[in-house]
Length: 191
Image (tube, rainbow, N blue to C red; front, side, top):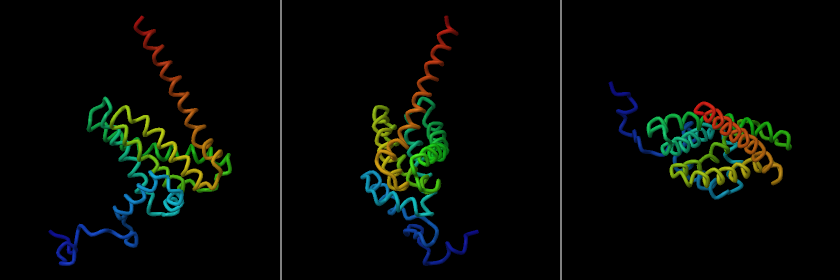
């Protein structure tokens, strides 16, 4: 059975959807992503204050991680699936860490208002599709996150840099230590 809305002659499945209807216009998402990538300071507050942008931010983060996951050793399909799942979950966890550290540096934004621009800031992770460009995407994402934290939390440059790079540095050191421990365990197991 065909839904009544599809039988209406005025039905156009390709029309642009308005925010007034509770939907997201693709052209506005692209425009915001472009402004984020250009480090347009005003867009971060705009995204943070737009309650309809939460789902889009999660989608951007998940899509960028899924694209990056294609180049992994797990296979294309599993890379996309796990990338999308970890991209979405990682957005909320990482933003939580940044939110807590940001409070120590005078951050004013509520958690959810930080989630939105941080999701858009994950877009450069898609460069991980080409392994050598993954590092470029990581660095560019950190730069965008610093700008987002500065604008949304209404803090200075130093506080924004510390808010993002301190937890990143701690996690990086933990990752190195875990890799060393795993290497030592493997060496001990095979010697």
